[in-house]
Length: 194
Image: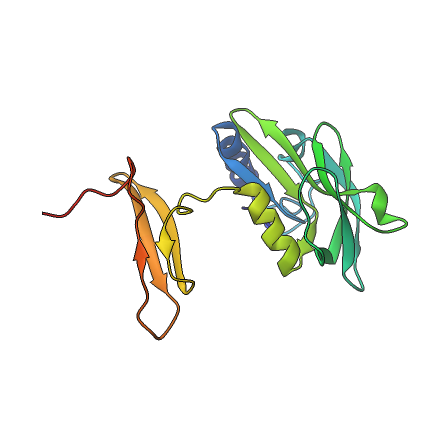
């Protein structure tokens, strides 16, 4: 995820683009790539380096005085999902629109777009989501988390990552009381300790 990555050199933006081309799902947020490595506005259509791969660009933006409700065009939105603080005036070149602003002027711009790029995908989010909208975005981006089959108490969260040795799970109990979490049986179960 690269949200608000304003000051970025060209090589860093190219690595983000290449990450998506190699099979990653890159999520871009407002102002990413707008400034160069010195924080100066680039002499390029925004978002620089990433716009063509994302299938979008923007020429204008706006501060939001109050949160704006959204319209769905391809993703599920919960009641109360809103854009806050910022709105990019995104123009679609070759991307699928997933959500838009419910507003008399900003409504002509999409809030969220997505586009396949190489083996992966780039999703552009042109605002700062409130908590409800943020949760909707993550449910859309990751409809079935890797740890979805874990059996666990409500206070237990499971995160994972990969290393050269394979997948690693991080299990956290956020309660002061003892809680349980159990790895689901199946082909991806960890090896039994001897």
